[in-house]
Image 1 (cartoon, rainbow, N blue to C red):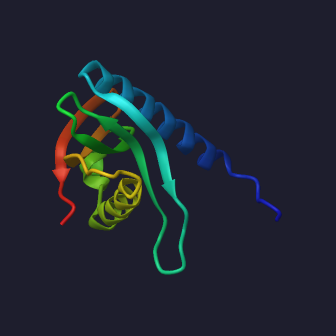
Image 2 (cartoon, rainbow, N blue to C red):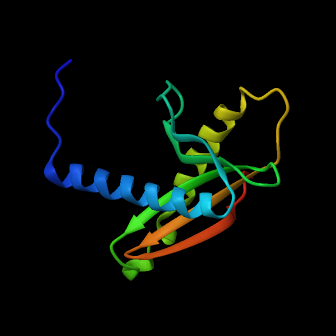
Amino acid sequence: MITKPRSEAAQAAERTGTQAEDRALAYLQQRGMRLLERNYRLARGPSRRAGEVDLILRDRDGTLVFVEVRARRNASHGGAAASVTHAKQRKLIYAAQHYLLRWTSLPPCRFDVVAVDGNEIEWLPAAFDAQ
């Protein structure tokens, strides 16, 4: 398989995303959360689109937290949090359900969003539900 070289813009976007994830992880760990997985990816299947969870953490109370990290240079056009669309939420939920298949006893779970707008970090616990 021949892979096409990625553009500089794509590489820059990946670096920005990785840096935002690093910042979000440090922020959440400072608040007592423990990292379980980073960039949990679900392979594309024949009837489903691929899904990915940026961070999976365990909160102090035992809750499993699936975190979507979004980054924007600034908060114009709605900011990073506004970019977590319903379609993105569905992909996260699907990937989380797949991740949970490995658990024999399901812990309480929630979906958080960490929005990084420039130098600002906004943490939105329980940003959406799996329903």
